[in-house]
Image 1 (cartoon, rainbow, N blue to C red):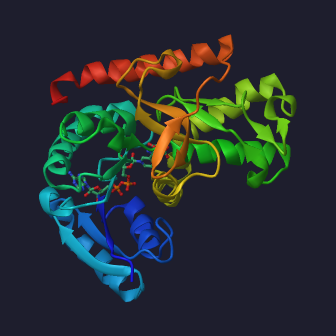
Image 2: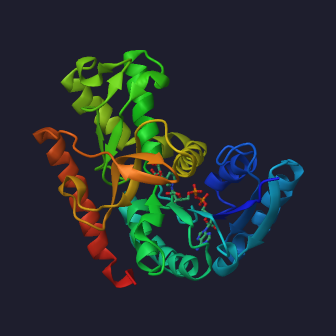
Length: 324
Ligand code: NAD
Ligand code: LMR
């Protein structure tokens, strides 16, 4: 039998985790022959609710679930963790931007970055989901000086999947026929979903849609999808966010089928300020990710990539005091 791996989930009694934990325990993230130990973190007022989640996880009798630790202590939750999904944070409500959560949530990620630094596996892979995800990943990473910057990533896969779904619907083709989707920048309303590299059934996506739909419909729909869901549901996306988190971690660990979008520390590629957590097109293989290089960037794309970069720079400036 394969040795179990340790998967830490924060905010484990919240909405996203109510889908995420069960799917991970079912083998959707790491495969149907990889046992997992779930290390679930909550804050003290939510520990009763977390007990209920643990009871339900047990009641599923998942064959791959090799153990559960439920705790309100980050040091316990991250002990020897191979994967850490940092979901626990306040969600925004109607009329808010994700950056409005920066001050409320930033302190969580400095504490958790330190705990990861001191207690997690040296190979831990960290995915930040809690908003504003990119800058929270930056804060966590800057508080974990003994870990590699590249171990800290932010979730852009939901945006990537939303872009795939919008394009599939517009062209009447299946998601499986779409390649080379890219979302650049921040998980915010400035993100830039870029179709210039993308193909549908081998044909350039931009030859299948008109510029007006691209600019006035596709881009704003993807950028504003989170807000549209909050308006419709009265709560932010949960099952789709959990699904995207699983896609992100699965591809990082086991390899991607082509390009995916991940928020990663910029290495200066495409002229982006080094260090900020910026979404790039990447290919995952051998347990690692690599930025897709040498793409041609036109003036339309360059301007939008810069706008979202500028937003990330100003978010970083706003949390300077928390950067380790
Ligand atoms: P939720 O309010 O249902 O759950 C959050 C949970 O986190 C709560 O149970 C809360 O008790 C817990 N929590 C708060 N502080 C904590 C801490 N310090 N340690 C551990 N747990 C803590 O929210 P949700 O809908 O599950 O969303 C969680 C976060 O994910 C929000 O910030 C939301 O905006 C974000 N989100 C991001 C994306 C993305 O694409 N990056 C998508 C959807 C939601
Ligand atoms: C999303 O994109 O659905 C999440 O980031 C939640 C939000 O605040 O929009």
